[in-house]
Image (cartoon, rainbow, N blue to C red; front, side):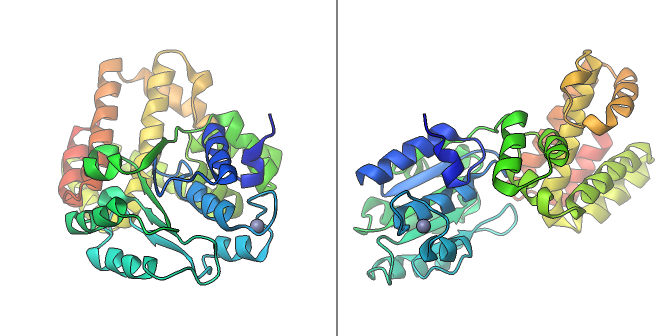
Length: 327
Ligand SMILES: [Zn+2]
């Protein structure tokens, strides 16, 4: 089988690429797609690649080299819109209305308009309800793509009107090969990043071009050490200080979650499977000081905090509860 994911520039998700490629080739695209999957798994990258495949000028689509593909990649194509939601900033009804207005017009130069809404689980109820109308009566030539990390937070009526593609985190070796093949990463760096990424393709790709990301991870782990060694009062201060950088919290908690998963692996004698390969010694020592039930309850507390923040809980309170429970 031809490896289409490499032409699409996608790491992993081969089945999804094959399915979309087939739909493009047969002219049988759905009007609306929903790409589901954990943060940074590659949902937006796949959505942009689909926008290219729909409108690319070459015969093997997407070529990622023609003018159309390049404009789309640069976010400058007049008929392809990317509207980014986020854990903190929600998509508003005004943004949906603007898109609906544009969809009523014929494309400026593309075959089909493509609109991508990312992290749609964070959209306001008004925005979601407003988009529902467009999904019910899709304008002839448009393709709508929504991405979301949690299906449970979307209106069921939205989900049922989209073709759903659930993306799972690719394996370490898949990410490693992809970083070398598509992003020209040095093989040693690719191996290290693939393990540290723990399925977060977007993080790994970003880290290839940005060494500061690896440094940030060091800081995040250092911060965890300090929280754990702080007194009760000290922990409350940490909660206050960290909650002021709300945008950073999802990434911070992801790093901590990966750390705690590794502690659990090390505790049950599987340190060869840890993601934080560069800190195996510390992991083993730290794991030995904790019981399995304790590690499991810390993991649960971290995941719960991550979910609470996504649901717009008060970050300071959420961190206080977490920090007082961690041990
Ligand atoms: Zn092209």
